[in-house]
Amino acid sequence: MKLFIPGPTQVAPEILAEMAKPAIGHRTAECARLWRESRDGLQKLMHTKNEVMILTAPASAFMEAAIRNTVKEKSLHLICGAFSKRWFDIAKSTGVDAIAVEKKTGQGFSADDLRSALNECGTVDAVTVVHNETSTGVTNPVQDYAEVLKDFPDTLLLVDTVSSMSGMPVYVDKWGIDVCLFGVQKCMALPAGVAIASASPRALERAATIEYRGWFLDFLRLAKSNEKEQSPTTPSTAHLYALTAQLKRIFSEGIEARWKRHYEMAAYVRNWAKSHGYEMFPDAGYCSDTVSCIARGTGPDFVPVLDALKEEGVLVSNGYGDLKGKTFRIGHLGEHTLDDMRQLTEQFDSILEPVLN
Ligand SMILES: Cc1ncc(COP(=O)(O)O)c(C=O)c1O
Image 1 (cartoon, protein in one colour):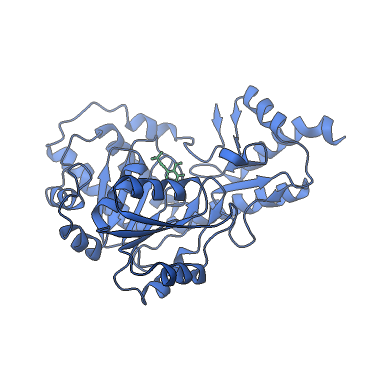
Image 2: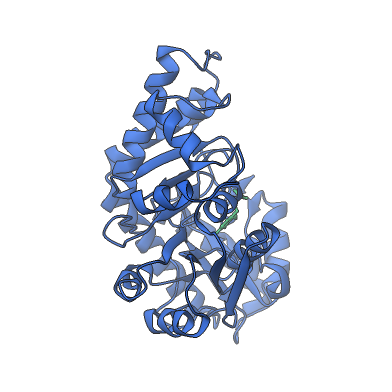
């Protein structure tokens, strides 16, 4: 099956081969080398000098960790889709006073929206935002938030970059991101199973003031273990081999070249959609470069096309939740190329041909 869903995505054969290497002890020099190389590479990828932590877990683990380690009493959550809503639900489940500010699906949060929300809800320990809302194809302008947060010095900025990291520009330090988290099954093009997060000195200081942070998700335990280039628990060494190899692959392509490739695929897909009478679901200026969420508009019914594509071994996503049947999503991320997009849309068009003619 060829995956054009918004993750998981295709993994290069040589990266899969890395995962077949024999198991190694997790307290060996070889594992320490993998840990060190991964963390060094991740700092470079994320444009940060902050502490970088790795868990063999899904990205949601770090969504929960971010709350447990930085929110003492109250958190604010910018919700514009399923994953930003999940972060709010996670916060509520930990017992903190979680406040939601919600936008209609398809809309994002401007810096002014963030300022109004912060002004309205009083002092909060942290604000959460999903950079790239995979469920709606909306990218939030996180690059503009640091300026606003200068006026709220006790509020930490927690950002989910699960479906943007390595596919779109993210500058953790320049953008003032205190906790930046992601998984590896999207633009990183690895099999799911590794979660990554950076924590700023401020985030680590905050963690130190919170007594019950739990054990597995404790930032300070993870940071201390990093000093020995080790995981506190037994990591998947297969994933560490794949991660170090994939980071090398990404740097040999070049981070900016990778962003550009994603941008070009998105531009191509948007033009193709428009030429069929489809519309981009996100508001203008909020469209993602990694996931195109396409609304029916005046275009032909796409549901039978998605079914036919599946029969042909190609998976494109229907809309998420309530958006099923109203939108569909093409993931153009990870190792995909413009040629893959051309082939996909040609295949889509050939199924549509009898309808269009
Ligand atoms: C934006 C975003 N955040 C969080 C998640 C959750 O990731 P995981 O399933 O690895 O926990 C996803 C998964 O698709 C996502 O797209």
